[in-house]
Amino acid sequence: MIVYTYSEARQNLARLLAQALEAGEVLIQRRDGQTFVVRPQAREASPLDVGKVNVRLTRDEILGAIYESRSRLAEPPATHRIRRRRQVSKRPKRHAR
Image (cartoon, rainbow, N blue to C red; front, side):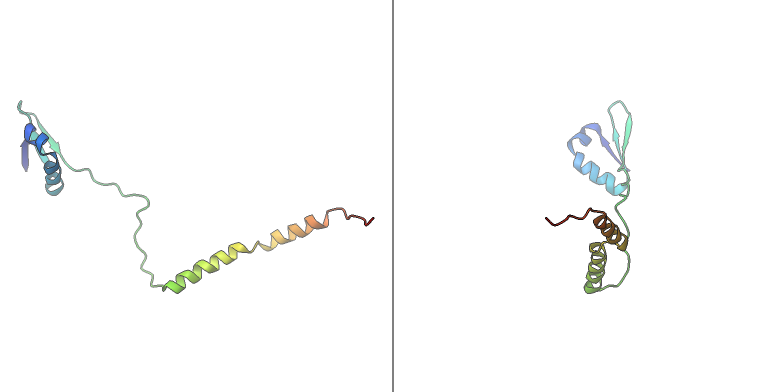
């Protein structure tokens, strides 16, 4: 385990942190004998970090799936078209003058 004096730790903070990362922890000892431990904090995984999926798809297959899903979104559902027709048919007819 690596032990630094307080003065050495202040002067060489970057090196101290690098050694703490390598060794797991570093001690800093003050003149009065008090000792402090510096250790790197474990990184928490991001919720956006996801593992890869091993699916062997070609570029064309991926693009085809994207185009297909977008084309389904472009067409309104059949119920939407029926409602439109009903709304149009409820309008009062205009008489020719």
